Amino acid sequence: MESYDLVILGGGLAGMCAAVEAGEKGASVLLLEKLDELGGSTVLSSGYMAFTGTDMQEVAGIVDSTESLVKDLQEVGGGVNDSSLITFYAENQLETYSWLVGQGIEFRSLEAVSGHSVPRGHIIDPHQAIQALYKKVKQLPNVIIRFCAPAKRLLKNEEGRIDRVLYESEGAEQTVEAIKGVLVTTGGFAKDEALLGQFAPQLNGALRIGGRGNCGDGIKMAWEHGAWVNDLPYLNGTYGFHPSASGAVKMQGLAFYKGAIMVNQLGRRFVNESISYKLLGKAAFEQPDKITYQVWDQTVMDKSVADDPLYDLELLRRRRLLYITDTLEELADCIDVPLEVLEETISRYNQGIQTGEEPDFGRKTLTHNFGKPTPIEKAPFYAFESTVAMLATYAGVAVNSAAQVLNPFGEPIPGLYAAGEVTGGFHGAGYMTGSSLGKAAVFGRVAASEALSGAAIK
Ligand SMILES: Cc1cc2nc3c(=O)[nH]c(=O)nc-3n(C[C@H](O)[C@H](O)[C@H](O)COP(=O)(O)OP(=O)(O)OC[C@H]3O[C@@H](n4cnc5c(N)ncnc54)[C@H](O)[C@@H]3O)c2cc1C
Image 1 (cartoon, rainbow, N blue to C red):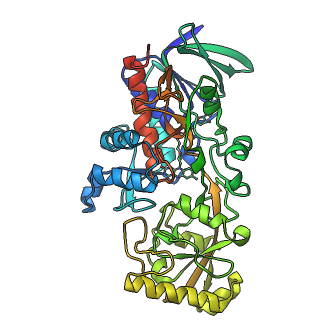
Image 2 (cartoon, rainbow, N blue to C red):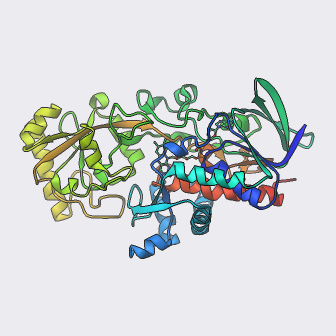
Image 3 (cartoon, rainbow, N blue to C red):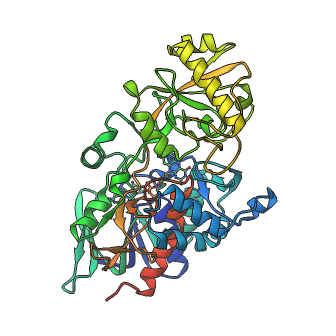
Protein backbone atom coordinates (compact mmCIF):
# COMPACT_ATOMS: atom_id res chain seq x y z
CA MET A 1 0.00 0.00 0.00
CA GLU A 2 1.19 3.51 -0.84
CA SER A 3 1.86 5.71 2.16
CA TYR A 4 2.13 9.49 2.62
CA ASP A 5 2.32 11.81 5.61
CA LEU A 6 -0.76 13.69 4.45
CA VAL A 7 -3.48 12.72 2.02
CA ILE A 8 -5.56 15.66 0.75
CA LEU A 9 -8.92 15.15 -0.95
CA GLY A 10 -9.72 17.87 -3.50
CA GLY A 11 -7.68 20.41 -5.43
CA GLY A 12 -9.49 23.73 -4.96
CA LEU A 13 -8.01 26.65 -3.09
CA ALA A 14 -8.12 24.92 0.33
CA GLY A 15 -6.49 21.72 -0.94
CA MET A 16 -3.85 23.53 -2.99
CA CYS A 17 -2.87 25.84 -0.14
CA ALA A 18 -2.60 22.80 2.13
CA ALA A 19 -0.50 20.89 -0.43
CA VAL A 20 1.99 23.75 -0.77
CA GLU A 21 2.12 24.38 2.99
CA ALA A 22 2.74 20.69 3.78
CA GLY A 23 5.14 20.27 0.87
CA GLU A 24 7.24 23.24 1.94
CA LYS A 25 7.44 21.72 5.41
CA GLY A 26 9.03 18.63 3.84
CA ALA A 27 6.09 16.24 4.27
CA SER A 28 5.19 13.63 1.71
CA VAL A 29 1.78 14.56 0.29
CA LEU A 30 -0.72 12.94 -2.04
CA LEU A 31 -3.55 15.14 -3.31
CA LEU A 32 -6.41 13.23 -4.89
CA GLU A 33 -8.53 15.24 -7.32
CA LYS A 34 -11.78 13.78 -8.58
CA LEU A 35 -11.72 15.56 -11.93
CA ASP A 36 -9.18 15.93 -14.71
CA GLU A 37 -8.48 19.51 -13.63
CA LEU A 38 -7.86 21.52 -10.50
CA GLY A 39 -9.89 24.42 -9.22
CA GLY A 40 -13.41 23.31 -8.29
CA SER A 41 -15.66 26.26 -7.42
CA THR A 42 -12.57 28.34 -6.78
CA VAL A 43 -11.94 28.95 -10.48
CA LEU A 44 -15.59 29.85 -11.10
CA SER A 45 -15.58 32.37 -8.30
CA SER A 46 -15.48 36.15 -8.50
CA GLY A 47 -12.14 36.05 -6.76
CA TYR A 48 -12.86 38.31 -3.78
CA MET A 49 -10.85 37.54 -0.65
CA ALA A 50 -11.66 39.23 2.68
CA PHE A 51 -8.48 40.54 4.29
CA THR A 52 -7.77 43.36 6.64
CA GLY A 53 -4.63 45.38 7.42
CA THR A 54 -3.07 44.82 4.01
CA ASP A 55 -0.72 47.07 2.06
CA MET A 56 -3.53 47.53 -0.48
CA GLN A 57 -5.87 48.92 2.15
CA GLU A 58 -3.10 51.18 3.39
CA VAL A 59 -2.40 52.57 -0.09
CA ALA A 60 -6.13 53.22 -0.52
CA GLY A 61 -6.22 55.01 2.85
CA ILE A 62 -8.68 52.52 4.33
CA VAL A 63 -8.70 52.20 8.08
CA ASP A 64 -9.63 48.69 9.14
CA SER A 65 -8.85 46.32 12.01
CA THR A 66 -9.13 42.69 13.02
CA GLU A 67 -11.73 43.75 15.61
CA SER A 68 -13.86 45.33 12.90
CA LEU A 69 -13.49 42.21 10.73
CA VAL A 70 -14.65 40.00 13.62
CA LYS A 71 -17.56 42.33 14.36
CA ASP A 72 -18.69 42.34 10.73
CA LEU A 73 -18.37 38.56 10.45
CA GLN A 74 -20.44 38.16 13.61
CA GLU A 75 -23.10 40.61 12.46
CA VAL A 76 -23.35 39.11 8.98
CA GLY A 77 -23.48 35.60 10.45
CA GLY A 78 -26.40 36.64 12.62
CA GLY A 79 -24.38 35.88 15.75
CA VAL A 80 -24.81 32.13 15.24
CA ASN A 81 -21.42 31.48 13.67
CA ASP A 82 -18.58 29.96 15.68
CA SER A 83 -16.71 32.84 17.28
CA SER A 84 -13.55 30.76 17.77
CA LEU A 85 -13.32 30.16 14.00
CA ILE A 86 -13.88 33.78 13.01
CA THR A 87 -11.51 35.11 15.65
CA PHE A 88 -8.86 32.66 14.51
CA TYR A 89 -9.47 33.73 10.92
CA ALA A 90 -9.21 37.42 11.76
CA GLU A 91 -5.98 36.92 13.65
CA ASN A 92 -4.34 34.82 10.94
CA GLN A 93 -5.66 36.22 7.66
CA LEU A 94 -3.01 38.88 7.19
CA GLU A 95 -0.19 36.34 7.41
CA THR A 96 -1.99 34.19 4.82
CA TYR A 97 -2.44 37.23 2.55
CA SER A 98 1.35 37.75 2.63
CA TRP A 99 1.93 34.04 2.09
CA LEU A 100 -0.34 34.07 -0.98
CA VAL A 101 1.51 37.10 -2.37
CA GLY A 102 4.74 35.19 -1.74
CA GLN A 103 3.38 32.25 -3.75
CA GLY A 104 2.92 34.56 -6.74
CA ILE A 105 -0.80 35.21 -6.39
CA GLU A 106 -1.70 38.59 -7.80
CA PHE A 107 -4.17 40.87 -6.01
CA ARG A 108 -5.43 43.47 -8.41
CA SER A 109 -7.94 45.77 -6.65
CA LEU A 110 -10.12 46.37 -3.66
CA GLU A 111 -13.90 46.87 -3.31
CA ALA A 112 -16.57 46.95 -0.61
CA VAL A 113 -19.03 44.12 -1.07
CA SER A 114 -21.47 42.15 1.07
CA GLY A 115 -20.85 42.47 4.80
CA HIS A 116 -18.01 45.00 4.59
CA SER A 117 -17.91 48.10 6.78
CA VAL A 118 -14.93 49.23 4.70
CA PRO A 119 -13.62 47.96 1.37
CA ARG A 120 -11.87 44.67 2.15
CA GLY A 121 -12.62 42.55 -0.91
CA HIS A 122 -9.15 41.89 -2.36
CA ILE A 123 -9.63 40.59 -5.90
CA ILE A 124 -7.60 37.78 -7.43
CA ASP A 125 -7.92 36.03 -10.75
CA PRO A 126 -8.77 32.59 -9.33
CA HIS A 127 -7.34 30.76 -12.36
CA GLN A 128 -4.05 32.60 -11.90
CA ALA A 129 -4.10 31.71 -8.19
CA ILE A 130 -4.63 27.99 -8.75
CA GLN A 131 -2.01 27.97 -11.51
CA ALA A 132 0.51 29.73 -9.25
CA LEU A 133 -0.03 27.13 -6.52
CA TYR A 134 0.15 24.30 -9.05
CA LYS A 135 3.43 25.67 -10.36
CA LYS A 136 4.72 25.62 -6.78
CA VAL A 137 3.57 22.04 -6.26
CA LYS A 138 5.40 20.96 -9.39
CA GLN A 139 8.60 22.30 -7.84
CA LEU A 140 8.07 20.15 -4.75
CA PRO A 141 9.07 16.54 -5.49
CA ASN A 142 7.45 15.39 -2.24
CA VAL A 143 3.97 16.48 -3.38
CA ILE A 144 2.01 14.40 -5.87
CA ILE A 145 -1.31 15.28 -7.46
CA ARG A 146 -3.36 12.46 -8.88
CA PHE A 147 -6.14 13.51 -11.26
CA CYS A 148 -9.36 11.60 -12.03
CA ALA A 149 -8.96 10.00 -8.62
CA PRO A 150 -12.14 10.48 -6.58
CA ALA A 151 -11.91 9.58 -2.92
CA LYS A 152 -14.68 7.15 -2.02
CA ARG A 153 -14.40 6.30 1.68
CA LEU A 154 -12.28 7.05 4.74
CA LEU A 155 -10.99 4.06 6.67
CA LYS A 156 -10.18 3.76 10.40
CA ASN A 157 -7.57 1.70 12.17
CA GLU A 158 -8.23 -0.40 15.27
CA GLU A 159 -7.70 2.56 17.58
CA GLY A 160 -10.42 4.46 15.74
CA ARG A 161 -8.06 6.81 13.91
CA ILE A 162 -8.68 7.69 10.26
CA ASP A 163 -5.53 6.44 8.59
CA ARG A 164 -6.43 5.36 5.06
CA VAL A 165 -8.43 6.52 2.06
CA LEU A 166 -10.17 4.34 -0.45
CA TYR A 167 -10.18 5.97 -3.86
CA GLU A 168 -10.64 5.16 -7.52
CA SER A 169 -7.99 5.46 -10.15
CA GLU A 170 -8.01 4.19 -13.72
CA GLY A 171 -11.12 2.16 -13.06
CA ALA A 172 -9.72 0.33 -10.03
CA GLU A 173 -10.10 0.79 -6.29
CA GLN A 174 -6.92 1.76 -4.45
CA THR A 175 -6.10 2.32 -0.80
CA VAL A 176 -3.54 4.80 0.40
CA GLU A 177 -2.21 5.22 3.94
CA ALA A 178 -2.15 8.65 5.58
CA ILE A 179 0.45 8.55 8.33
CA LYS A 180 -0.31 11.91 9.91
CA GLY A 181 -3.77 12.67 8.71
CA VAL A 182 -6.40 12.92 6.01
CA LEU A 183 -7.51 16.39 4.98
CA VAL A 184 -10.89 16.74 3.32
CA THR A 185 -11.08 19.74 0.98
CA THR A 186 -13.74 18.48 -1.41
CA GLY A 187 -15.79 21.70 -1.47
CA GLY A 188 -19.55 21.97 -1.07
CA PHE A 189 -22.56 20.35 -2.71
CA ALA A 190 -23.93 23.01 -5.05
CA LYS A 191 -23.99 20.39 -7.81
CA ASP A 192 -25.73 17.62 -5.90
CA GLU A 193 -29.49 17.60 -6.37
CA ALA A 194 -30.03 14.86 -3.81
CA LEU A 195 -28.32 16.76 -0.98
CA LEU A 196 -29.86 20.08 -2.03
CA GLY A 197 -33.27 18.42 -2.19
CA GLN A 198 -32.74 17.02 1.29
CA PHE A 199 -31.33 20.11 3.00
CA ALA A 200 -32.46 23.06 0.91
CA PRO A 201 -35.82 22.24 -0.71
CA GLN A 202 -36.63 25.95 -0.47
CA LEU A 203 -34.06 26.47 -3.23
CA ASN A 204 -35.77 24.30 -5.80
CA GLY A 205 -35.73 26.33 -8.98
CA ALA A 206 -32.63 28.36 -8.08
CA LEU A 207 -29.82 28.29 -10.64
CA ARG A 208 -26.97 25.89 -9.77
CA ILE A 209 -23.49 27.30 -10.33
CA GLY A 210 -20.46 25.58 -8.85
CA GLY A 211 -17.58 23.21 -9.50
CA ARG A 212 -18.85 20.19 -11.39
CA GLY A 213 -17.23 17.82 -8.86
CA ASN A 214 -18.85 19.54 -5.88
CA CYS A 215 -21.31 16.88 -4.81
CA GLY A 216 -20.82 16.72 -1.06
CA ASP A 217 -18.54 13.65 -1.20
CA GLY A 218 -16.42 14.89 1.71
CA ILE A 219 -19.40 15.57 3.95
CA LYS A 220 -20.73 12.08 3.33
CA MET A 221 -17.34 10.46 3.94
CA ALA A 222 -16.81 12.35 7.21
CA TRP A 223 -20.44 11.87 8.27
CA GLU A 224 -19.94 8.11 8.07
CA HIS A 225 -17.32 8.44 10.79
CA GLY A 226 -19.44 10.56 13.09
CA ALA A 227 -18.73 14.12 11.93
CA TRP A 228 -21.23 16.71 13.14
CA VAL A 229 -22.57 19.09 10.50
CA ASN A 230 -23.10 22.82 11.09
CA ASP A 231 -25.13 25.60 9.43
CA LEU A 232 -27.54 23.41 7.47
CA PRO A 233 -30.54 25.62 8.38
CA TYR A 234 -28.85 28.62 6.74
CA LEU A 235 -28.42 27.31 3.21
CA ASN A 236 -29.26 30.18 0.89
CA GLY A 237 -28.73 31.11 -2.72
CA THR A 238 -26.95 34.27 -3.87
CA TYR A 239 -28.86 37.13 -5.45
CA GLY A 240 -27.88 39.10 -8.52
CA PHE A 241 -27.70 36.66 -11.46
CA HIS A 242 -29.53 37.07 -14.73
CA PRO A 243 -31.97 34.14 -15.13
CA SER A 244 -29.99 32.94 -18.16
CA ALA A 245 -26.68 32.80 -16.23
CA SER A 246 -24.46 29.74 -16.15
CA GLY A 247 -21.11 29.17 -14.53
CA ALA A 248 -19.18 29.72 -17.72
CA VAL A 249 -20.28 33.25 -18.58
CA LYS A 250 -20.45 36.00 -15.97
CA MET A 251 -23.96 37.40 -15.88
CA GLN A 252 -24.02 38.76 -12.38
CA GLY A 253 -24.30 42.36 -11.27
CA LEU A 254 -24.54 43.77 -7.78
CA ALA A 255 -25.86 47.22 -8.66
CA PHE A 256 -27.75 47.20 -5.32
CA TYR A 257 -24.45 47.64 -3.44
CA LYS A 258 -23.81 50.74 -5.59
CA GLY A 259 -27.29 52.16 -4.92
CA ALA A 260 -29.87 50.25 -7.00
CA ILE A 261 -33.15 49.16 -5.44
CA MET A 262 -34.80 45.78 -5.87
CA VAL A 263 -38.45 45.57 -6.90
CA ASN A 264 -40.84 42.69 -7.44
CA GLN A 265 -43.37 42.22 -10.21
CA LEU A 266 -45.78 44.43 -8.28
CA GLY A 267 -43.28 47.29 -8.52
CA ARG A 268 -42.60 47.23 -4.78
CA ARG A 269 -39.37 47.01 -2.81
CA PHE A 270 -39.27 44.08 -0.40
CA VAL A 271 -35.95 44.25 1.46
CA ASN A 272 -33.11 46.48 2.68
CA GLU A 273 -30.77 46.10 -0.31
CA SER A 274 -27.60 46.64 1.75
CA ILE A 275 -27.72 43.26 3.55
CA SER A 276 -25.86 40.06 2.60
CA TYR A 277 -26.73 38.94 -0.93
CA LYS A 278 -27.44 35.50 0.52
CA LEU A 279 -30.25 37.06 2.57
CA LEU A 280 -31.32 39.11 -0.46
CA GLY A 281 -31.55 35.80 -2.30
CA LYS A 282 -33.86 34.42 0.38
CA ALA A 283 -36.08 37.52 0.21
CA ALA A 284 -36.15 37.49 -3.61
CA PHE A 285 -37.21 33.87 -3.70
CA GLU A 286 -40.26 34.71 -1.61
CA GLN A 287 -41.60 37.24 -4.17
CA PRO A 288 -44.53 36.53 -6.52
CA ASP A 289 -43.38 34.16 -9.26
CA LYS A 290 -39.82 34.67 -7.89
CA ILE A 291 -39.37 37.49 -10.42
CA THR A 292 -37.40 40.54 -9.30
CA TYR A 293 -35.46 43.41 -10.87
CA GLN A 294 -32.65 45.65 -9.82
CA VAL A 295 -33.55 49.22 -10.80
CA TRP A 296 -31.09 52.09 -10.93
CA ASP A 297 -30.33 55.41 -12.59
CA GLN A 298 -27.36 57.04 -14.30
CA THR A 299 -25.80 58.10 -10.97
CA VAL A 300 -25.46 54.43 -10.03
CA MET A 301 -24.41 53.48 -13.56
CA ASP A 302 -21.54 55.94 -13.29
CA LYS A 303 -20.17 53.77 -10.45
CA SER A 304 -19.70 50.78 -12.77
CA VAL A 305 -16.23 49.30 -12.28
CA ALA A 306 -14.63 48.06 -15.49
CA ASP A 307 -13.53 44.42 -15.39
CA ASP A 308 -14.78 43.93 -11.85
CA PRO A 309 -16.43 40.52 -11.46
CA LEU A 310 -19.43 41.97 -9.61
CA TYR A 311 -19.63 45.66 -10.44
CA ASP A 312 -19.05 45.85 -14.19
CA LEU A 313 -22.55 47.14 -14.97
CA GLU A 314 -21.41 48.37 -18.40
CA LEU A 315 -20.60 44.76 -19.29
CA LEU A 316 -24.24 43.88 -18.57
CA ARG A 317 -25.24 46.66 -20.96
CA ARG A 318 -22.87 45.38 -23.67
CA ARG A 319 -24.29 41.88 -23.24
CA ARG A 320 -27.77 43.38 -23.76
CA LEU A 321 -29.03 42.19 -20.41
CA LEU A 322 -30.36 45.59 -19.30
CA TYR A 323 -33.56 47.47 -19.99
CA ILE A 324 -32.52 51.11 -20.54
CA THR A 325 -35.13 53.88 -20.85
CA ASP A 326 -35.34 57.65 -20.65
CA THR A 327 -38.40 57.66 -18.39
CA LEU A 328 -39.78 55.58 -15.54
CA GLU A 329 -42.93 55.19 -17.58
CA GLU A 330 -41.04 53.34 -20.31
CA LEU A 331 -39.14 51.29 -17.73
CA ALA A 332 -42.36 50.21 -16.01
CA ASP A 333 -43.71 49.17 -19.38
CA CYS A 334 -40.56 47.17 -20.26
CA ILE A 335 -40.58 45.17 -17.04
CA ASP A 336 -44.38 45.03 -16.83
CA VAL A 337 -44.88 46.57 -13.40
CA PRO A 338 -47.63 49.14 -12.60
CA LEU A 339 -46.22 52.62 -13.29
CA GLU A 340 -47.96 54.35 -10.41
CA VAL A 341 -46.62 51.77 -7.94
CA LEU A 342 -43.07 52.00 -9.30
CA GLU A 343 -43.17 55.80 -9.15
CA GLU A 344 -44.47 55.70 -5.60
CA THR A 345 -41.84 53.14 -4.57
CA ILE A 346 -39.02 55.26 -5.96
CA SER A 347 -40.36 58.52 -4.59
CA ARG A 348 -40.73 57.07 -1.02
CA TYR A 349 -37.26 55.56 -1.28
CA ASN A 350 -35.67 58.78 -2.52
CA GLN A 351 -37.27 60.81 0.23
CA GLY A 352 -36.33 58.25 2.87
CA ILE A 353 -32.66 57.94 2.03
CA GLN A 354 -32.32 61.73 1.76
CA THR A 355 -33.76 62.29 5.23
CA GLY A 356 -31.87 59.28 6.62
CA GLU A 357 -35.20 57.73 7.65
CA GLU A 358 -36.00 55.29 4.86
CA PRO A 359 -39.42 54.20 6.13
CA ASP A 360 -39.91 50.73 4.69
CA PHE A 361 -36.75 48.74 5.33
CA GLY A 362 -34.45 51.23 7.05
CA ARG A 363 -31.77 51.35 4.36
CA LYS A 364 -28.97 53.73 5.35
CA THR A 365 -25.92 52.38 3.53
CA LEU A 366 -24.84 50.90 0.22
CA THR A 367 -23.52 47.67 1.70
CA HIS A 368 -23.47 46.65 5.36
CA ASN A 369 -22.05 49.72 7.16
CA PHE A 370 -20.42 51.25 4.08
CA GLY A 371 -21.43 54.07 1.72
CA LYS A 372 -24.45 56.34 1.31
CA PRO A 373 -27.30 55.58 -1.11
CA THR A 374 -28.25 58.20 -3.71
CA PRO A 375 -31.73 59.03 -5.01
CA ILE A 376 -32.88 57.32 -8.17
CA GLU A 377 -33.70 60.32 -10.32
CA LYS A 378 -31.22 60.84 -13.15
CA ALA A 379 -32.14 59.39 -16.56
CA PRO A 380 -31.55 57.07 -18.20
CA PHE A 381 -33.04 54.43 -15.95
CA TYR A 382 -31.93 50.80 -15.89
CA ALA A 383 -33.52 47.49 -14.92
CA PHE A 384 -31.77 44.12 -14.67
CA GLU A 385 -33.88 41.04 -14.12
CA SER A 386 -32.15 39.13 -11.38
CA THR A 387 -32.54 35.81 -9.70
CA VAL A 388 -30.94 33.51 -7.18
CA ALA A 389 -28.18 30.98 -7.77
CA MET A 390 -26.99 28.24 -5.47
CA LEU A 391 -23.24 28.88 -5.65
CA ALA A 392 -21.72 27.73 -2.47
CA THR A 393 -23.28 25.66 0.26
CA TYR A 394 -21.40 26.90 3.37
CA ALA A 395 -22.91 24.20 5.56
CA GLY A 396 -20.59 21.37 6.33
CA VAL A 397 -18.61 19.35 8.81
CA ALA A 398 -17.94 20.84 12.22
CA VAL A 399 -14.31 21.79 12.79
CA ASN A 400 -12.29 23.58 15.45
CA SER A 401 -9.69 26.26 14.74
CA ALA A 402 -7.05 23.55 14.28
CA ALA A 403 -9.20 22.26 11.38
CA GLN A 404 -9.88 18.99 13.20
CA VAL A 405 -13.23 17.46 12.31
CA LEU A 406 -15.52 17.22 15.34
CA ASN A 407 -18.14 14.71 16.40
CA PRO A 408 -21.50 15.80 17.87
CA PHE A 409 -19.86 16.13 21.31
CA GLY A 410 -17.26 18.59 20.01
CA GLU A 411 -14.47 16.01 20.19
CA PRO A 412 -11.94 15.68 17.34
CA ILE A 413 -12.19 12.59 15.18
CA PRO A 414 -8.58 11.36 15.30
CA GLY A 415 -6.67 11.74 12.06
CA LEU A 416 -9.39 13.71 10.26
CA TYR A 417 -9.09 17.35 9.16
CA ALA A 418 -11.22 19.53 6.89
CA ALA A 419 -10.95 22.98 5.35
CA GLY A 420 -12.76 25.16 2.83
CA GLU A 421 -16.36 24.95 1.74
CA VAL A 422 -16.78 21.40 3.06
CA THR A 423 -16.78 22.87 6.58
CA GLY A 424 -19.63 24.56 8.42
CA GLY A 425 -19.82 26.90 11.39
CA PHE A 426 -17.80 29.78 10.02
CA HIS A 427 -20.49 31.74 8.17
CA GLY A 428 -23.57 31.03 10.30
CA ALA A 429 -26.72 32.70 8.98
CA GLY A 430 -25.05 34.97 6.40
CA TYR A 431 -21.94 35.41 4.31
CA MET A 432 -19.35 38.15 3.99
CA THR A 433 -17.97 38.42 0.46
CA GLY A 434 -14.48 37.05 0.29
CA SER A 435 -14.65 35.06 3.48
CA SER A 436 -15.07 31.74 1.73
CA LEU A 437 -11.94 31.94 -0.40
CA GLY A 438 -10.29 33.55 2.63
CA LYS A 439 -11.20 30.72 4.98
CA ALA A 440 -10.19 28.11 2.36
CA ALA A 441 -6.68 29.57 2.24
CA VAL A 442 -6.25 30.22 5.97
CA PHE A 443 -7.67 26.91 7.19
CA GLY A 444 -6.19 24.86 4.34
CA ARG A 445 -2.75 25.93 5.56
CA VAL A 446 -3.67 25.46 9.21
CA ALA A 447 -4.99 21.95 8.58
CA ALA A 448 -1.73 20.94 6.89
CA SER A 449 0.41 22.33 9.74
CA GLU A 450 -1.75 20.83 12.46
CA ALA A 451 -1.85 17.41 10.83
CA LEU A 452 1.93 17.39 10.44
CA SER A 453 2.47 18.51 14.02
CA GLY A 454 0.46 15.46 15.08
CA ALA A 455 -2.10 17.46 17.04
CA ALA A 456 -4.91 15.04 16.31
CA ILE A 457 -3.01 11.79 16.72
CA LYS A 458 -4.41 10.27 19.85
C1 LIG B 1 -19.79 31.74 -9.14
C2 LIG B 1 -19.14 31.75 -7.79
C3 LIG B 1 -18.62 32.93 -7.28
C4 LIG B 1 -18.00 32.94 -6.03
N1 LIG B 1 -17.36 34.07 -5.62
C5 LIG B 1 -16.71 34.07 -4.44
C6 LIG B 1 -15.93 35.17 -4.05
O1 LIG B 1 -15.78 36.16 -4.78
N2 LIG B 1 -15.34 35.14 -2.82
C7 LIG B 1 -15.44 34.07 -1.99
O2 LIG B 1 -14.90 34.10 -0.89
N3 LIG B 1 -16.13 32.96 -2.37
C8 LIG B 1 -16.74 32.93 -3.58
N4 LIG B 1 -17.39 31.81 -3.98
C9 LIG B 1 -17.31 30.62 -3.13
C10 LIG B 1 -15.90 30.03 -3.24
O3 LIG B 1 -15.49 30.02 -4.58
C11 LIG B 1 -15.82 28.60 -2.69
O4 LIG B 1 -16.48 28.50 -1.46
C12 LIG B 1 -14.35 28.20 -2.53
O5 LIG B 1 -13.68 28.33 -3.77
C13 LIG B 1 -14.25 26.78 -2.04
O6 LIG B 1 -12.91 26.35 -2.11
P1 LIG B 1 -12.58 24.86 -1.74
O7 LIG B 1 -11.14 24.66 -1.97
O8 LIG B 1 -13.15 24.52 -0.42
O9 LIG B 1 -13.45 24.01 -2.78
P2 LIG B 1 -13.40 23.95 -4.37
O10 LIG B 1 -12.63 25.06 -4.95
O11 LIG B 1 -14.79 23.76 -4.84
O12 LIG B 1 -12.55 22.64 -4.63
C14 LIG B 1 -13.03 21.37 -4.26
C15 LIG B 1 -12.30 20.35 -5.11
O13 LIG B 1 -12.55 19.03 -4.58
C16 LIG B 1 -12.77 18.16 -5.67
N5 LIG B 1 -13.50 16.99 -5.17
C17 LIG B 1 -14.82 16.88 -4.87
N6 LIG B 1 -15.10 15.64 -4.44
C18 LIG B 1 -13.94 14.94 -4.46
C19 LIG B 1 -13.58 13.60 -4.13
N7 LIG B 1 -14.49 12.69 -3.73
N8 LIG B 1 -12.28 13.23 -4.26
C20 LIG B 1 -11.34 14.10 -4.70
N9 LIG B 1 -11.63 15.38 -5.05
C21 LIG B 1 -12.92 15.79 -4.91
C22 LIG B 1 -13.54 18.99 -6.67
O14 LIG B 1 -13.49 18.44 -7.97
C23 LIG B 1 -12.79 20.32 -6.56
O15 LIG B 1 -11.69 20.38 -7.42
C24 LIG B 1 -17.98 31.75 -5.23
C25 LIG B 1 -18.51 30.55 -5.74
C26 LIG B 1 -19.06 30.55 -7.02
C27 LIG B 1 -19.56 29.23 -7.57
